[in-house]
Length: 235
View 1 (cartoon, rainbow, N blue to C red):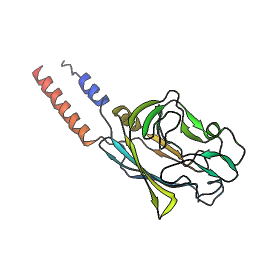
View 2: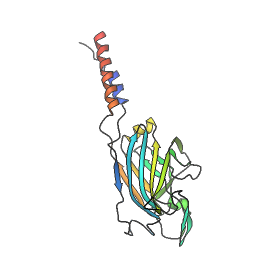
View 3: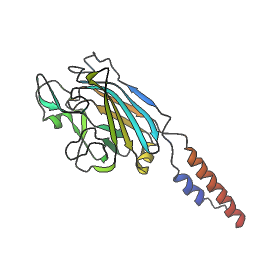
View 4: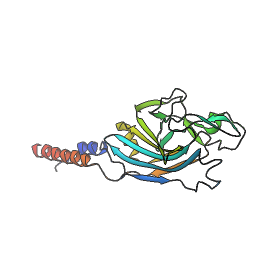
C-alpha cells in the first residue's frame, strides 16, 4: 500500500494568510444625536456620526471617523461648562478573541501619537478624569493603559473640518498592520471608539472572520500542491 505524505500540505494550509472581509465596512452611530441615551451633554463636542473601515492597501488599514470634537483639528484638550477636568480625544480600539490593540490619536501617558499598540488593559473615563462630579459615563473605556503596552508600528492621520465647522471633523487614520496582527484580525474583531474621555458618545461594531483566501494565498497553495505532486512522483 502506498503511503501518502500529508504533512507538507497540512503545514502549508496552517500557515496560509487570510484576507479581511471586503471593504469598506461602515458602522453608523446607533442612536440619534439628540437622544439623551446616546449623547450626554452637547453633541457639538462629542458626537460620532460614523466609523468606516475604508480600505486595506498593502498592509495599511485606513479608518475614517466622522465625529464632533471640542478641541478642533489639532485634537487639543478642551473644557465644557460645569465640568471641571479637561477632556481629550479617545483612542481607537481593535479587539480580537486573543488580544486588544489601540491606535493613539493624540499621545498620552508616554504612548505616542500615531502609535499602534498591543495593550494589556484600558483606562476608563473615571480613571482618566479622576472621578469628577458631573454627568459622564464613568465606566466607558476611553484610553489604552500604558503599562504592558507594546508598540507594533507607527501610523499617521489626517484630520479636516467638515462644512467649515471647527468641531465638525473627519479623521482619516492609517494603521500599518504587522503580519501577526493582520492574521489575528482575520479571525474577526470588534471596534470601539469614544469621541472624548468623558465617554459621552461612543461607537462599537463587529467585523466577522474572513472566509476567502487572498489571491496570493491561492497561488501559494497551488504551487505547494504542485510541489507535493512532484515529490510523490519522484518517490
